[in-house]
Length: 194
Image (tube, rainbow, N blue to C red; front, side, top):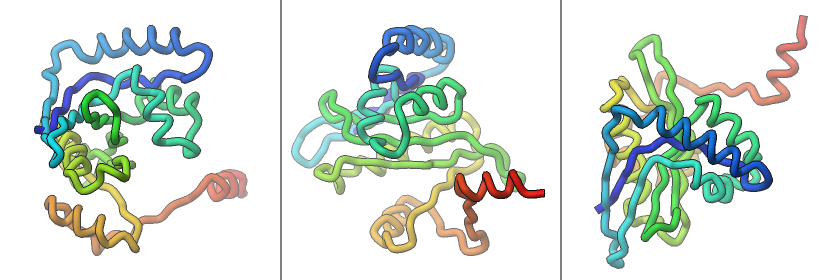
């Protein structure tokens, strides 16, 4: 069985100041957990090991940062979490982190509250064990519990295996909407235009 446990994540800095971050994180966790029922999903892997997927905690910050390595600094990760910009679910096998889902709330004028799934990561040697599905299942359970109307995410066009996987869990490819991105330089250029 796959196990999901809900608690609030607060990634903490991996260097100096982590103790303060942990203290701040624990206070935020206690405030957010009041009155919420923990989400749980469990799964046994093909080799018999136990998989646990749960919402991340402050103690997971180093592992999340390791998995996000080179994409974002641990300071930015902490700062953005404390600002409520994202949430995570952590997949663990026998207590060791093996994957995560990073997601954040959005709003659709067509559908109402939505969740955007930004990243799913599973250690390469454990892919094909259902961990990715379990991570998405966790986010779906959270979305259902909190009354979200939809979940959305993107996949690169050449990753046909991911497309098949997403379709196998009931996701549909958008044919009417084309995503557009304005990167950092594009934002700066547009913001400075007259």
